[in-house]
Image 1 (cartoon, rainbow, N blue to C red):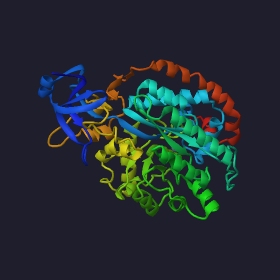
Image 2: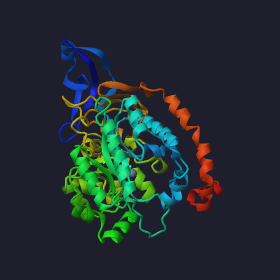
Image 3: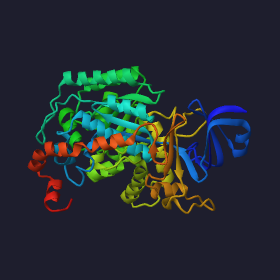
Image 4: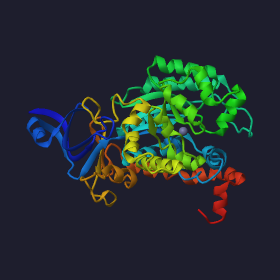
Length: 474
Ligand SMILES: [Zn+2]
């Protein structure tokens, strides 16, 4: 008998191997040294392996942990403060964004990360201006992080409509240097769970020279660039005015479209531009709820996929989504595309599940380690409890209804267990590696302080949400 760290026995496995969902019935998965080393039937598992931790999950389905490709967890300290408005950035977010401190943002990140893990996310694609404390928290909580730090040369001040951003090369260089520092400090740390990417905020915020420098540095270090691309008419305007062409053409001419680039949103891309990016080998992160709420748009992820590109799902940010829950995003991507194309066969549930797992892992460059349950990969997996009202009844013949119910009916609380690198980090909706209450209490200290600091600008701007307050609608 071989001694191993863990065996996982369950009636249903969705391994995501192959082109579908890789279904296996009544299987045991064997984990040792953080990796998956075997799959076999229950009886043979009993004969061959003696496990330190034997998980018997008798009414559960086992899946790879979900991938959230694009998050701004720090914005969570402003959850629910900017939705349902035109000009989200200026009229919704700005009064609050100008009022929060780094410590308050860190508190927001902790709660967002806890929320995401409880809904089955194990890989967090976080992206913001200051990421050291996020890396520290992810390391402690035991999750996997794919972290980019914002690089921006455009001066941080208010710009009038139509005004070109003022680029400050010294500021851009400084922010790139900080991203390099973050890479040197954190890349492959935490038993390899943390990876650092490079994060120009968008091509409207940096010069072409700086973009090329970032590309060179990222390639030398064998990592990727994570960047908002063609994310709104504001960006298109800036780029056309500065260079006389649209974003995609500009990036193509610059030699920026290749497999080292993860493009986020593509909100303003037409189908031809979308196909060009997909065929270049670059990948995409689509954030259905966030862009739906902020812009009232559905981004062209199905065109990207049809052209052969990999697409990950992202939850983006909590002041305009307003949650970090990949199960919700799976439902949203299916619903929005069915509505967009007036076609119920567009974006079936199984495809959304692939985006949340193996396709998402490919898109953000972590499929060598995670995204599917296969021998040799890291053991990042979740167990979903089928004894929940939202998952019942369970059919296995003549068809299985587990995937449709997971995508269209589950809400997150059905995730009973979550493991990363073969270590259980969440059980029965309780995170085992940290004291959640500390983070939950901490964030609640801040709304009054932030609210008071933001109130003057909030009332001066007098946006939709200020009006809703006056009209007893909030
Ligand atoms: Zn973003």
